[in-house]
Length: 260
Image 1: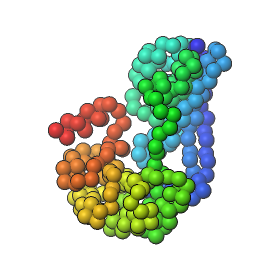
Image 2: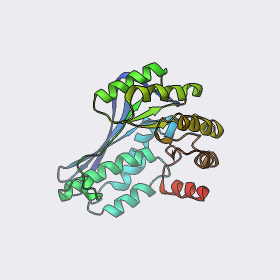
Image 3: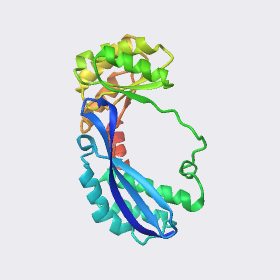
Image 4: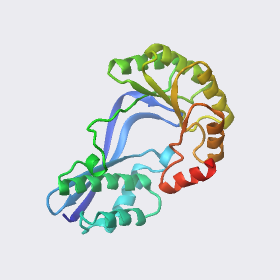
C-alpha cells in the first residue's frame, strides 16, 4: 500500500450555541481535513482544529505545513513501513503539532486498513467504548446549572466545567452545577490558563471546603508557568492536570523535572 496523494480541505460547522472558555469563544468548528490516498484505493482520514490561541496553529499554517513539508516527505512511501513514516512525519518540519497530528491520524487509519484491524486494537485497546465528558461553557451560574442539567438528561455522567472568566464567580458556578446535577455526576474543571497560582490555590481550596467533589483541575495557570503549576499542585488537595503545557514527550519530561 503506497501513498500516492495527500489532500487537505476545510470544514466549518456552526455550533447550536456559542461555546465560551477563558481563552476564546467558539461559534463554529473550523477544522482542516486530511486525506491520504494510496495505490490500493484505500484512503486514510485525519483532522486538526485551528486553535491559534492555544497551539499557535491556524488553518493556513496547518495546510501549509502539510502541503509544503509533510506531503513531500511521505509521498511514494509504503504504509507498511510505519516506523519510517512516523520518523519522517516528525522530522520534516519543526513544531506544527496540529498538522502532524492530523496526518498521524490518517496514517494510523491506513495502517489499520492494511491489516484489517481497528486502530484501537492496534494501540492495544480491548474495549469498544470509552467514557467521555461533556464540556459546559462558562456563563453565569444559573445558565451553567441549566446546561449541566440538560447534559445529564442527554445521558452524560461526567461533566467538564469551564471556568476562569470573572474568577470571583467560579466557586458560585461550581456550587450551582453541583446542586443541579447531584452527587452521582463526576465533575472536573478547566480554567484554560486563566488563574494566577495563588488565585488557583485559593479557589480550589474553597471548592474543596464546600465539598464540591472536583475530580481534577485542568490547566489552572499559564502554560509556560511550570513553577506556578507546581505551586498549585503542592498547595491544593484537588489533583492538577496539565493540558496546554504539554505538546510533546519532551514537554512531559520538562514538567517531571520541575515536579521532583
